[in-house]
Image (tube, rainbow, N blue to C red; front, side):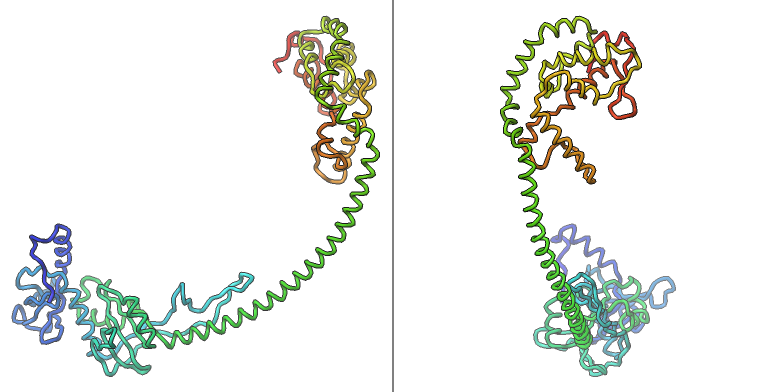
Length: 474
């Protein structure tokens, strides 16, 4: 018999829990080993029933009431917390044992571990489904019914037999069947269902007909704990599916092996072709480098930083007087533009300030407003007018032609290099166009010229204005 400690020794949370649970009316009373509904016994304490939970005397109430469901109440405030659950559990077992009829649920497998129908993926990732195990819900007649028959290490609530053999029945009111019991039942090959009454509506236990319906026939509150026949059929279906998937995997492996062999043969062919291409490329590489061998031999010396610095100093000394006279005749903005230069501007064999001032005089200062010039024309004039290093120019032209050829072949090539030259050689070769382009852009910023939409690199000389009298902020 369960005993409830005195309220004084219970914490507040325990008191609150007991009060909430005690608020449920006791639906069934216990007398002479049977569970009775209030309408089945005499009124009041003459019912001679005890609480199934705490064993205290009960009184049957509201048997003829139109407002309340018939129920039992403790004669004294026993603060019972288990009378309702224990009564529901006992009455459910009694109903099953006496009615000897029961609705069995359909077997649906397990979504994760035992999907019905079985499911598997082949090696290509495609899903396959096996045969559906059709084990529908049905009603059965029970014979040889026993309540709480012991099987040694587990004891079902109800033991019975139907047309398929032994059937173990568990009634859940508070605790579900634990894993240990379920494992033992499955290991012994017995059938077991669980009827879940833990979510019954509060008033259902006080309606004998509704309670009986919930215990015996409600298909939504029961499931299989162990169903050997369905499990065996599922395993057979899974075995059939596995054989089907194995067959499919053999086909997949065969196709993959064929593809692998074909790929291996293709790689062999490509390796031979690559070897031939590599040999041809190496031969062409050597031939092309041979054409530029003399120029490449001078490249490192010609572009050494110390040589460039020394050359620029010499150019500046040689052109100092001439540059000074030219600077006196140009506006401040032009002077500012001509005294700056691109880092490759030394390649034309003269002081960068001098060739820029002379190019300005030739193409802009001596031309009327509206005259046109092109960057290519300026570059050609500078090369003709001075003494650029021929070896460096030839190497630059080779780079430029190589990029143009790549573009004609459909490649989006921006970098100015040549495949037969090394990375260091390509980096050392000075650019003969960019010093001209940058010079004209500075004059554009000083409003000496303005660009035209076409053709590419075309400019127009602007009329003199106040803007060109001052250096450009750029």
